Length: 254
Ligand code: BTN
Image (cartoon, rainbow, N blue to C red; front, side, top):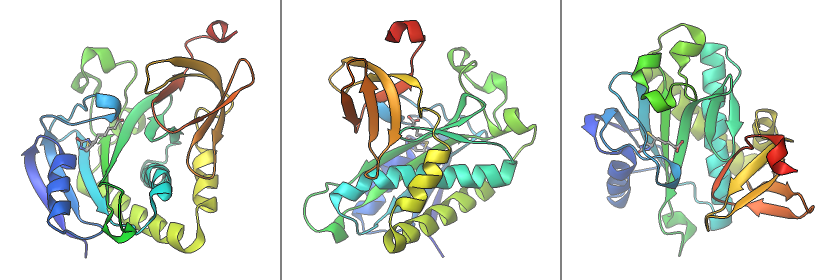
């Protein structure tokens, strides 16, 4: 049975999970909060975490993998969330590299993967998979600036869901996919991820970590978990970090 720490209010479940990882909690341990006061998103963004409306959880993984395998964990987590939401809600889920969960073109969830120092022995490395999903949020639960771009399971399916049940399903599926990754490799996980890739073949803009903007066509994710973007000159960029979004207009590209 995997251990879970349930908290009413926390700043960020990723922060608390890191403390527990440092104290030796095992693979599969999780921190789940009803509310976060300083939920963190990727690239320094915040994550709105109102009580009772969403899933805010961090799962500790000690996958025993080498450094170069860690990009695959992010994609595996996105696939685990998609599979569970699809089964539970009978909705089509899309993934935006590396880890955004979309339904009907709107963002329904996100995953923030943080790691330990990846120096030294692989056995000592860990990953913190922070998962935020808008579950029972109505339109007014979102701040005005997110009302057009965000959605929830309630808004998409018309039904409310039990947050603990969604969480238990996701953790079980993630741990099962990680066993598959270790035993059979990444091919089948990647195939299923690609089936849900919302950027594949689309014109995108990539904001690089250095602050430059590269426009190009997304060629999809490769076997190491990186995204390939072909710019207007035909040059192919291997994207490992930064923000990739659909380009506002094709005119911008040409
Ligand atoms: C993103 O889309 O930018 C990632 C959002 C991740 C949010 C979750 S909520 C639980 C966990 N704790 C955090 O502080 N962030 C993640």
